[in-house]
Length: 169
Image (cartoon, rainbow, N blue to C red; front, side):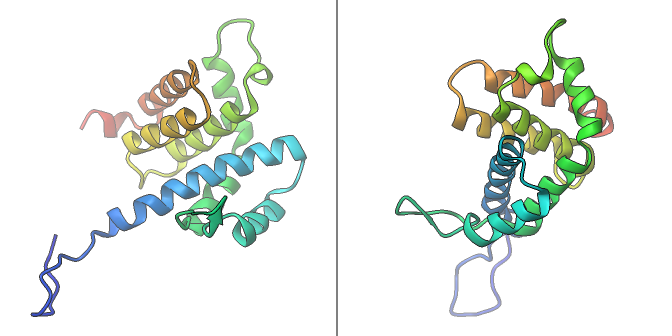
């Protein structure tokens, strides 16, 4: 960290990555919620992005202040997961036990995995460990059972394929 140039201030400047982290976490959660909503409600990606930007990213929820989400990051994850779904779903299908179909997974788990896989494959600017941790935390927010472990296993396997160079640095 660097000190500010103001001689009267002894406070360090915030790190840009640290400032961005809560906004990106909020964007990831919103993207998962939006993917779920799109799958269960059939709404298109552009309308969903508009709805979330207008009503759900930041502000208050049940009287509690919600951290403002990084709107551009949210839109990138949502749009990217939708646009690459034909590539993501076969990968997910290969991770399932023989005889299981992707449609058997809970819709929230599918949304978490699609968002996480998109980020793992297309967002090389985000370290793979961050991707895994963030989406496992989202899974823990929704599930008490085996789902967070499943999300961890699938994203870890994806990291070994998509981020092999980063893992072995």
